[in-house]
Image (cartoon, rainbow, N blue to C red; front, side, top):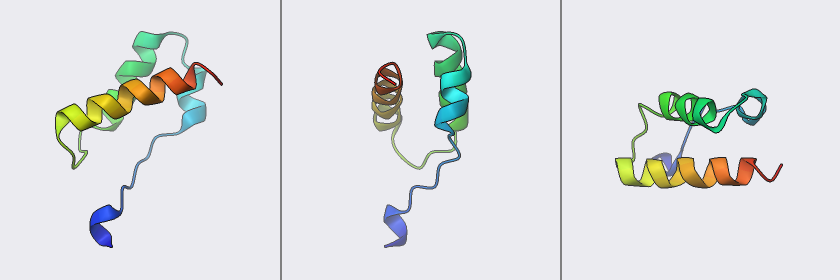
Length: 56
């Protein structure tokens, strides 16, 4: 289903190479500015992504 196609250009390695949480947040947020989801869903995704990235 095309509606379920969530293309995303985020590169986890790029995220992990950033030095601070604020840099990671800015990078991810800017990468998702054209997301076709409501802002609250995008923000929840970003927070979970960054939380999980800390465990890697």
